[in-house]
Length: 153
Image (tube, rainbow, N blue to C red; front, top):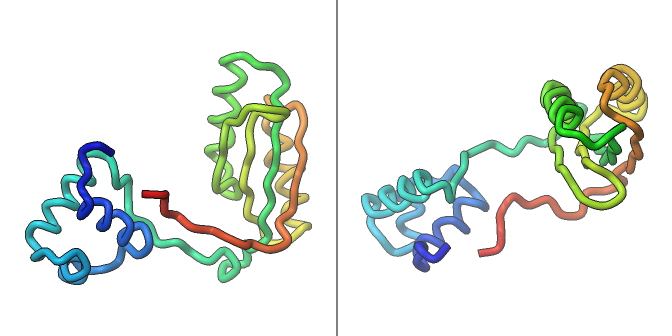
């Protein structure tokens, strides 16, 4: 972050909140003309500060608003089993986030489902087919309080 000046930081904050703004709109917010703003954004992208641009969809609009955090313990801790688990999880659409963690569990999955019945089918048919899983523990989300996609700058 040493390479960033205040204008870069302002651009990143603005884009992390709403990346659909035009270059002209961004330029007005940081008091520059469009050309230097475009150059700065291209530099931020090429240096990896901006990984990609996405539309954040509302899971409820697609009947996938039932959110579950599923804690996973592997059967064993070795490289082959860990890599196989990751390979298998990457193929499962209901898993929208996966984190390798320390502590009582090895991984935490964020799973989107239609309802409890869909989640039960997911556990039996999809997670159940992942041979490297030793045990699972599910936590059901009652209400989403905060969900942002920006970082502290």
